[in-house]
Image (cartoon, rainbow, N blue to C red):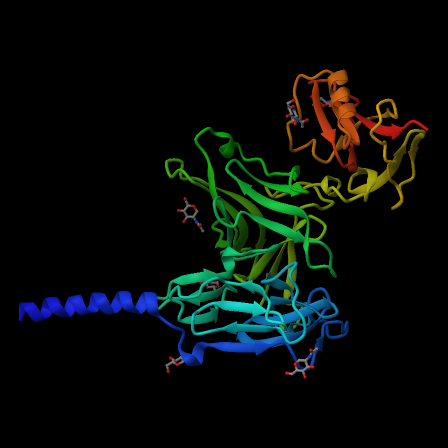
Amino acid sequence: MATSCISFIFFCIILRSFTISDAIVPQNETFRYVNQGDLQFGTDYLTYDSEYAPTYRSLPPYTFPFQLCFYNTTPNAYTLGLRMGRTRDQTVRPWVWEANRGKPVRENATLSLGSDGNLVLADADGRIAWQTNTANKGVVGFAILSDGNVVLRDPKGNFVWQSFDHPTDTLLIGQSLRIGGPYKLVSRESVTNNVNGAYSLVIEPKRLALYYKNDMRYWSPSFSELNRRNVMLANVTFKIAETEYEETYFHELKFGLVNARPIFDQTVYLVLGRIQYNSSLSYLRLGVDGNIRAYTYRTDVRSQAWTLLYTLFVKRENENGMIFEDECQQPNRCGKFGLCEDSQCVGCPTPNGVFAWSKECDTKPPGCKAGGFTYYQLKGADHFTVKYTAGNRSASRSDCESKCSKDCGCMGYFYHTDNSRCWIAHELKTLTRVGNSTHLAYIKKPVR
Ligand SMILES: *[C@@H]1O[C@H](CO)[C@@H](O)[C@H](O)[C@H]1NC(C)=O
Ligand SMILES: *[C@@H]1O[C@H](CO)[C@@H](O)[C@H](O)[C@H]1NC(C)=O
Ligand SMILES: *[C@@H]1O[C@H](CO)[C@@H](O)[C@H](O)[C@H]1NC(C)=O
Ligand SMILES: *[C@@H]1O[C@H](CO)[C@@H](O)[C@H](O)[C@H]1NC(C)=O
Ligand SMILES: *[C@@H]1O[C@H](CO)[C@@H](O)[C@H](O)[C@H]1NC(C)=O
Ligand SMILES: *[C@@H]1O[C@H](CO)[C@@H](O)[C@H](O)[C@H]1NC(C)=O
């Protein structure tokens, strides 16, 4: 009796390890979809349709309100994307996840899940554009979950792979950025060109920050908690939670920044807005313009299902303990070069004075030759990096200038006379006008 019981357990253990390592995807769970057939149009402005106004083909995998599609904004260059919303919503349906940014596929490309458990996007010639690298890792099934997470499951229901670990420019509710994991969002280059753009939202041990071209920080929320020596961030999660203190607006969308050291267990929250309805179907987007916006989705309405709830860079005062920034903090607000004030482009600085701003406002390349350039001064102007970076302290203005002069790529420098801080700028873009004559800008100009 005892022996048979033991051998039964033994048998179970063997069976179990056998199942996990050699699990194959059952025949009826495998699929192969070919990118061919009639194209649908997202460009009908009467019915509205899909974000970026592409043509597209929808694929069978669908879990309300998420659907996999091949879409293209330039002919014969398709992205495999996850779209959110229904036709009857009569609002543009956004793409909330994508597989192959920068690696478009053509007509007759295939998306397939084979019995080995690898999900593969292959171009028409067989070249692999994207894959989950999950062959022989115990995958037994594929699913789009109701929160928009696309998953490959093992026999125990664990996720061998999940799209939530592979964000591009969008986070859904419950999705995180993590130290040591998916740590950033990267903007899209433009509406028509789906390659990485210039902006990123990055989680770092001491901050959440927005960068232009990887190293020019233009925003970071300040939390005194994060300045404590022992506090290191672990992750930041896009959440919705019920609020206790509001009767009418009982749900709150927020970013929870979680400390890695449980001794200081506090999570700090960046509140994005309060709503009256339960919208665990929402998304947060790092836009083509480097702005952050949060949208909520209502399932119980006939039209206008999407609402823009939060915009980070906006012409508005701080309110309700929420964080907003003036549009002038956006690097590209005034194009290649311009002076910005109260969210407006108000001037085009030149060696001969400040003129009216236009899109053509730019600086001339100063060249690299010593003596081939000089500087002109602007009083009361800050670079977009000044507000959220420390600059170099206790430098004299001439130190600051010689640093810029020795640096071929330096387009100008920014100096605060009241605390002797210095910033070097490799791109000028948007300067903010500040009512403070201790803030000086020196812009390089070619000599003749
Ligand atoms: C495949 O078959 C199994 C067993 O019959 C069933 O439980 C499962 O739902 C099927 N999957 C699909 C995608 O039809
Ligand atoms: C796609 O494949 C079909 C055959 O399955 C072929 O008739 C068609 O020409 C192909 N389309 C392109 C654009 O290569
Ligand atoms: C965030 O970090 C905390 C602390 O390390 C951890 O307990 C939690 O599981 C993490 N959450 C996510 C979504 O990664
Ligand atoms: C909000 O909706 C989600 C998903 O439908 C559900 O899990 C959650 O319990 C809801 N919350 C409330 C307070 O109704
Ligand atoms: C500050 O000075 C250090 C050392 O000279 C240099 O490595 C760094 O790039 C400087 N930072 C800025 C913002 O100029
Ligand atoms: C100018 O800016 C400095 C900080 O850089 C601040 O201490 C000072 O009060 C400001 N002056 C005015 C007139 O705003």
